[in-house]
Amino acid sequence: MNTMLAARVVRKVRTRLVTFLALLYFAAFIDRVNVGFAATQMQRDLGFSPAVYGLGAGIFFLSYCLFEIPSNLILHRVGARRWLGRIMITWGLIAAAMAGVRSVGGFYTLRLLLGIAEAGLFPGVLYYLTYWLPAAERARLIGTFMMAIPLSTAISGPISSGLLALDGALGLAGWQWLFLVETLPSLVLGCLTLWILPDVPAQARWLNDEERHWLEGTLAAEAAGTVARAPLHRTLVSPRILALAACYCGADLGLYGVVFWMPQILSAAGVAQGAVGYTVAVPYAIAALGMLGWARHSDRSGERVRHMALAAGVGFAGLSATALLQHSVPLTVLAFAVGVTGSLAMLPIFWTLPAALLRGAAAAASFALINAIGNIGSFAGPYLVGWIKQASGSFTWGMITVAAGVLISGVIALALGNAPQRARRATPAPLGPRA
Picture 1 (tube, rainbow, N blue to C red):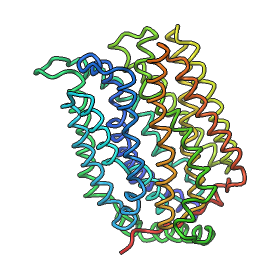
Picture 2 (cartoon, rainbow, N blue to C red):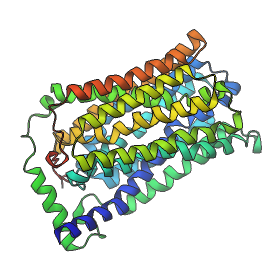
Picture 3 (cartoon, helix red, strand yellow):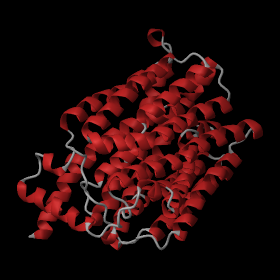
Picture 4 (cartoon, helix red, strand yellow):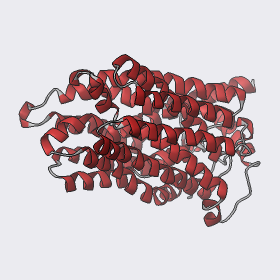
């Protein structure tokens, strides 16, 4: 009976909550990375160099990092519904304003503002999910949420190609159409968030009393085994939290060093401009399946660190291969598929590790700190690839650099082997927002 009840609750949380949150991140990721598809036309119209584009793509993460911790602490106090809704609407308006970029300064300014507006969404959702997810199901359900990363890229690729083809329609460039149209989902979902998102299980009308009591009781029992509370400042500078942040930095170096530049790498390899978006969709569609399958396997086995390290090794191998195979479109796409699958498969497993150590305001702040430091890699990845490309005339050493970042993440994960690895021992407290 308890098994059937648990399965029913987990299914409801996945379909009614995690899927909706994945839609939010889906929209966020499109608005974050669609500049990669717009790059060629923007460079044509605005005269941006590869280094300018790389800095503009990455500079988003500087302001994003600075505002993550205060954003997550505000979410902890006011609740996810109001704060996530505010985040969505604000960044949607700024993303639409990208259509009005006319100069390097304007490009940099709007990317910085976009980072401020979006700060806190990803770590905020991860923290919010600790109110809802039993430990044994965590990697799989976080994987469901994080499938938004590959799926948004896979789906937005063909859509972006179609919007770019509107170049000149109604006096607007294709890249302007792209920013204006792809902003709309963020605004709609932001309004829906303010209306339907429950802050805690007690507010979920789609759970009956029996289901709600089981979920709250399960999370409370898991919370009883969490680490003792420590002062917030001590938690934030603890060696384990900083090591986790360094691990995530390498993962983000690989993720964003690839996603912003893959369209141009494929174009340089010989893919026709009108087919680039469709070609980008292939590696990310494969990666979506690989990410979810590997997260499920980690949950079934209860093991985390070796799963993460193996995924990092696969990611390193694939991304390194792209540096050597750019003379062949099929081989480049295959190498990207392997590299992106491995580097993305690490992510949902990674986020089970800090969830095993943290609770309350310390959890909110530490999730944000890990993501903020990790996003140094998000800034460095696209910038380094652009700088190396401009200096060498080739993407080869840039891709080797981002591949190395993924490998370093796997090495750090192995070094953290003493961190809690068993899903059933991972026990974040289901603390809701303060009254």
